[in-house]
Length: 99
Image 1 (cartoon, rainbow, N blue to C red):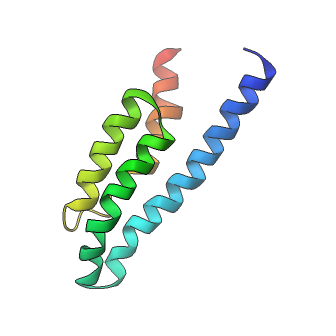
Image 2: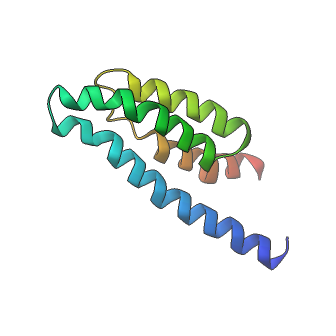
């Protein structure tokens, strides 16, 4: 692998971790405002699904986007950190399985 590719992969890895933590935090904000918070999930769910497909290309992004949308749209399931779990799968578990 070339040096430029390694730097790009590490940059995406770090960027996706920070964005994932941010987006999971935004999704969990609905717990702070009773009743209004669950309504805000109607707006956040499609945005979160899109962001997942934007962050992770291919099958992981598509499946992750659907799971994220469903998790955000269902009431009282916002505590699941889908962005962080996708990062763990993509950069830790998948990498171990490839070795």
